[in-house]
Length: 447
Image (cartoon, rainbow, N blue to C red; front, side, top):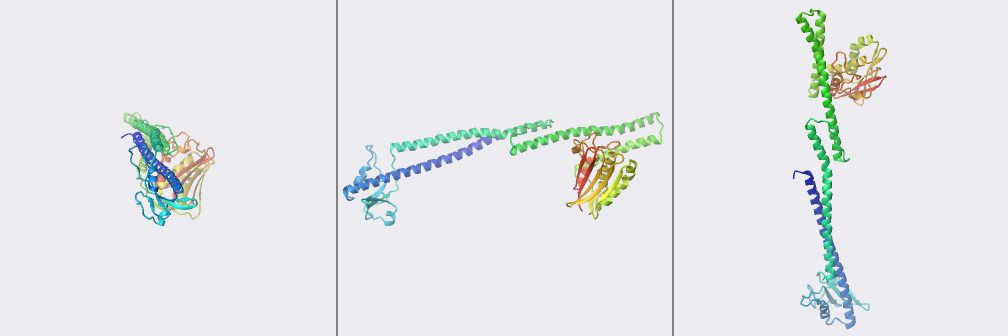
């Protein structure tokens, strides 16, 4: 019983057999009961008619018992005579034709007589017919009718079971087919073939499961590809400064170059680049593990943005870019790791300065909204292409025209900024119009 298809087929078949069996039994019971009632009613009508005719002919109930017993003699010689189905009671309430449980000469109460069928002759009630409580005797035609009815019910039941079995097989296969497809796709993924797409065959829960699997497979394949790309990028970032450093060391060792302060400074710069790259990777790994340390303290958004502006004022002036701070009055403080949040905002402002031409403007602003604090870095720079914008915070994504770090940076700045903001329970988003500028928004819960 390891096959889900077989289990479903047997379950459908069992439910169908039980349902059809109950329906057939109930149909047989109702049919038999109603047919017996019909025969009983017909026999009663005949008995009453015979009794009325007998009384009208004889004028009394004398020898009525012998008359009705002769009517009940079976046509087959030697067959036992069946007891009378009905009891005849005269107008005085005395039993004339006895049949168990009624005895000859027994007086019947008025209440019981009221449940009987009256015998009326010339407008006068001359007697009453009571049921003896016995099943009606069936003739050959009636017995054949019941047998045909039972046979039809049996054939209908077997036909319904066959149809239920066929539908059960089809339904079970239809239900398990997506599961088989998913199983095969999962097995392929276990072999390293991460990009799997399973056909969506329905819009029910199985269809939703298939769509979720396809999305997961696509995300895994993309993450794997980006991981490979990141590995290649990091290898490149490590190789370049290491090549410079080892080149200087070998040249100095062999006496090709003379040691000078400028050469030692160049080697130190490359070593610092390696240190920054390693620190960025460490920050990301701590954020992934949920272990990024945060030394929280309360600080006003204005103080945070003014500190940031003071750091970049000189660089903005050198690039002839206006750097402004616009903060609403009486804003509540935010509870953050100040150094980590400065790292986030410095990354955003540094990117804005890099991509804003001379004569442009960068605005640092903050305002409260719906119980949260929003800090924005808005520039009038070149903007970000629409196809690049959704990926700028992906740590494995690196586009030549995006705001990825260049010129000595690790290329992981925005991914780190996202991790730090999320560690604070916040969200960082970006909106951009190509050729008009970009706005980064950091949303943090208020203190």
